[in-house]
Image (cartoon, rainbow, N blue to C red):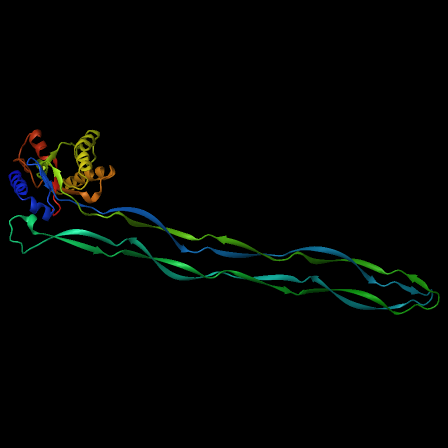
Length: 371
């Protein structure tokens, strides 16, 4: 593989005009290799606040208040009587309002209509992409790449919302007195005869209910309801980038000398320090390259558990790099379990711990744009 890349570099040095035409690296170093990289689109996730139910008013009726009121009424008129012939009387029924008139209030609650709102969750994107050209007659796959400018439509999400149809309202009406009570009184039918004697009228105290506070309406404001929708916003558009110069050894798989605890995918402090000094520095110095990470286990344990463990270990390295600010689109993780042993230590074969350790490994390599 290294020999093939050396021939490619020599050919590029001899064909400067062709380099300019095809966008190949200018003045390449014979001791270096170059990978084509397409800078990924950089997105930023933002939260969009959507009102799914508007604010509205609730009206509540507070009942009126009454209190008893006493009143002195005449129940027998004053009169004049004679000494010898008494006066005669007749009885009358007199009506009075026990419960006075009051004001009543009726309330109509707020109404709503269902609706939807389309929210842009991913914008339209235009970017460069490589497409293999199947009719190419060259042995060099780099001569068979077609650069296409692709357009991707925006993506929307439909969110159900409610619109305020009619807000709450109220109306009031005066209700006349409905509770009528009676008292009786005696009135003179015939006055006394003979010597007149004046008789004072008689009084009684009655009680009736009088409204002291009318019914009222108290309004309560219900706030609007919102949901938060994540939206991806394009910060930097990707596209065709320049060639990245790398050591030729990085084209092939290199062992990342990190160790894990038994049966665990958690990175130790020592492993994180090794990743910082190798992969993290490499990806920061070459911001457009992509890396593939492969994890392998020894043959001890079941094939299914080893496959799962290797996938989790490779992904733990990816997650650590993403946490350090590396774009996830630049990282590919693969787990191979015990399927690619480097020695004879398969199931049922007695091996030393050192031989098993040779199979427990994490590898990485730099990917070309078409890989």
